[in-house]
Image 1: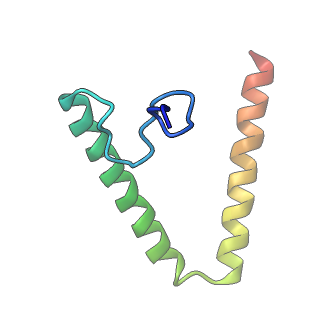
Image 2: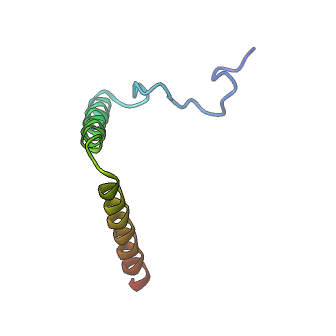
Length: 76
């Protein structure tokens, strides 16, 4: 088989190692990924103690934020 990318149209790095980026950008991308995963971990940890009412409250807050964004978008 002569396909260098194993059937993919372009060489896209899906490994999560960021090897397609220059070294400085790779370091920054890895730090962003680490910080994002830490935020997600803390969020999951906090939500383990939530009651059903708190989940409903969060859903309402998110819906309000989305409505605000839509109003701001439509006003522009």
